[in-house]
Image 1 (spheres, helix red, strand yellow):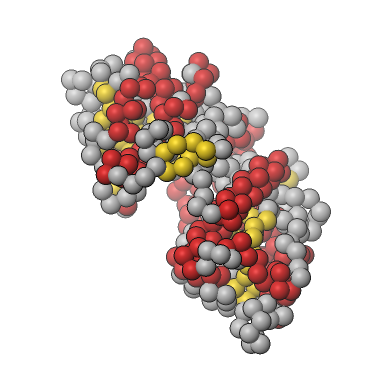
Image 2 (cartoon, one colour; image 1 turned 90 degrees about the vertical axis):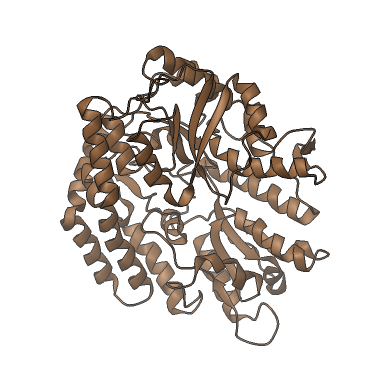
Length: 507
């Protein structure tokens, strides 16, 4: 309720003439200092005069002031800042919230749709992600690019070797592997105490990158939404969605996945795999390296025997439908309350173009080359620990939030401490590159239904709850289908109609 009141107040102020605050006497963004509001994901920001900060100022040709706000309250802080007297030149928005959408449509931020082409470092190398980050096809912020493909299958390699099996290539292979890991004593202890697939309670609803979402895409249901007969529909209205969840239900009913999947704490996801109680995880493949790091603390000499990864799986139709992330983590927007003229906008975009240069990205992500790291075989190798290098490392953990990365990754991956860890990193990077060719993007991502803004989250919980109950055997297939009908009759049909109207307008 508090957020809704703030957003409503902001919208009224915009419509009345440009947000209650006009930014004060220095408003306009044409000073020697550029101000940015950004989320802080660590307990404490480093001192402002750190080497990374200084390097960015040299690259930008401006003084830089970063207003860090705690991640836990960041959305509220952005609303309060917009309504206050000190609006920054640039604001990072972590997600495309209802408040941001309403304010963007009311004119609170610059429309950058036709302006970015003049700034080489701000031109996206992925039009699908660029479109997904837009509001009904209009660009109100430069998205912060992230790897568009990250998911795959993480497997206990020692269990594969013990049973003489290969990593799965299809969803049928996945079932067979889960069955073998559960029933064939892969750890060789003579006890029936292992489980195949490991899924935790997922802290989100439909379309939140859960293992269920990934499997549904593999089965051909689409990614959150899909096009059928020229019309966009939610993926959960397809038969492939039912088939995918029936597949997971079968795994659950046969005891081939953990019985506590609806309640297991997701923060402990690594532990059963690491402790030899479960053998398969469907998630971002980065998790494989995280788990291998745990093994490295215990047994460095046999490190190459514990973890294997493979790419996304071909579904029942024989086609690879790779599940992508949304490809971005929010965006950088330019408030009109601060940057008021086209001339000032060009100046700010010029600064952002420099901030998105390779030199700046390396400073924000890797640190200071020649001081805190060196480059070896194309990888960053950390330098010896010193107080100055520790400060640089702290700075990269905060300033990386300023990276836009719309041209694709141009920073260095960090060289791993062992051959096994390096090999796993190289393998997953190669998998991501290959699977990107088969990525299935959400065709409805750019479009903002008014009904979804007001009711979508509650409606999606209808489907999320029914999906878990169906997998757990608490309702049958008819019960799942009835939940989908309830979603439609409770406002879902209106969401579909509004989304398709926007989709057709922007074809």
